Image 1 (tube, rainbow, N blue to C red):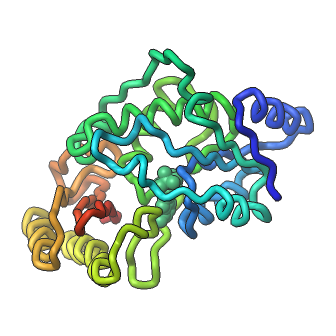
Image 2 (tube, rainbow, N blue to C red; image 1 turned 90 degrees about the vertical axis):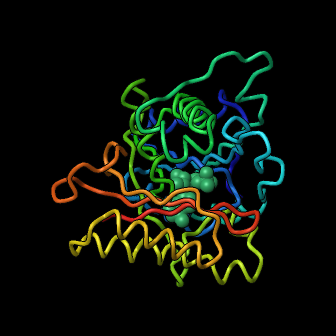
Length: 278
Ligand code: AMP
């Protein structure tokens, strides 16, 4: 079985041992309940580094009041089995280890954290930035791998790592999808059988809009059509937005800027997010 460290001291020691051997190290931060999307991150980590540490920590500070922190799917035994042949160590700290009693320090982020998810989940990216900082400082990797599935998070982490000069080059992994296009997510287990049938329409809607924009359609029209398609399919739509792929600012010139189409929508009690390049 793959070895598990529960303390910062322990993971630091093992990483230091690898370093003394001249080995490179990649970190894959996760909240566990691992699926094929996470395993794609591990595979990409192995392409960059000799040793791979996967962290498993359901980070309480990135969940808002009334969100699913207590019901978030947890399966440490299953996760360890999935990782046993592919990763080198798991870092699975307790909440007290990462947030010592009386903790009073958090990281705040602006820039790419401000809109979209930041508007709908006000404390979310501060929680993400805080835990990612702690994990990168605990492990001190050469590389850290994040998924494009959470595209805004990826940009927030890049900004954070640059601003705080955190250790580790940030590597992006493309979104892993089910055969019908639904982005893989630990939260997909919340979907009822009926909702699961509808869920791929989120990807279909933004992919259709992205193609239309690519082919010269007016962005506002294509985005509105995607929004209407989602409402028609039964989603409650939080946003469908075309943004600059590097800054996440609204697109001023759709002929010259790199663009990303991002969406968040709810089906019953499940909130789905997805994004595609344009
Ligand atoms: P999570 O466990 O949901 O916090 O995700 C941990 C990491 O896996 C994050 O960097 C996510 O962006 C990434 N991830 C989650 N789902 C996918 C997916 N379907 N494809 C690619 N990366 C993913």
